Image (cartoon, rainbow, N blue to C red; front, side, top):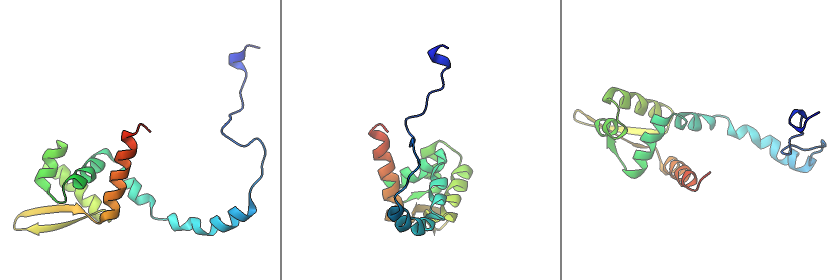
Length: 124
């Protein structure tokens, strides 16, 4: 049988089943705390919304029209994605006359996006 047809065992998994009961018992009850956190990553997993969030880390506040121009989309598209970010608790807005300005909801979201950008630049 040639080497290319032999199925090889992956080296990224344990070859025997065992676990550290103390660690499992300490960590397992806390795992449910992640419920809902995936929504942050889901919101930012869309390239357009991530671009918008990144733009809002570079400028504290942007008008919907500015966002549209920055990301190369229509105002309607920018508004749609900004509304989703707001509804998911990542952005906030304020009106000034006929203009609507958006900013990130808090410093945590700013840090999350900034750290992801730094990590990406390091060559994941």
